[in-house]
Length: 221
Image (cartoon, rainbow, N blue to C red):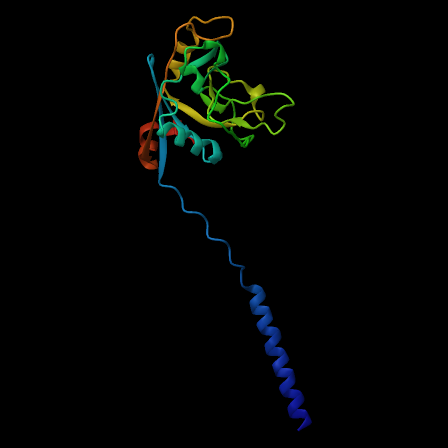
């Protein structure tokens, strides 16, 4: 009887070890990946010189969704490109540029700043859209303006700004408009002598349609 008990215990132990071995072989459950988006935003910046169309990056959701939110509310409509520098960039998005005081342009915003979303993958190339911000020791976290943005006008890009400011979009049509804007007459503060107003339109498209319309220009990186 002792032998039978010992034999039964051995078989039980063997089954337990085999079960553990089977469990060890089973792959751990992986989290369900987020759904692949099927639609995307197409941004149109309307100016008196023509339109610029742009896409926004998924890698910068704070900035991209904030831009869409403000644009849909009409926040940018009537604001101006208040700063233009040849071979560098054009800057706009300040609500104070709507008033009659040109000296306060560049100092306003929606009342908040944004957490930086700086990534080495997104560069300051020609047509890149990036968030303006305060520089120097007063802004060690490199937080962005809540609304002001600039668009790179230099066809060679401005690589010295990489990893310093958040790039969150790219103009994919109407890049020639940048050259027209930047060549307008301006004062000693780089403010255009005549207002260059903008309005911004947000449209939602199927991603497949955007790929057909813009091909390689529709590049999300």
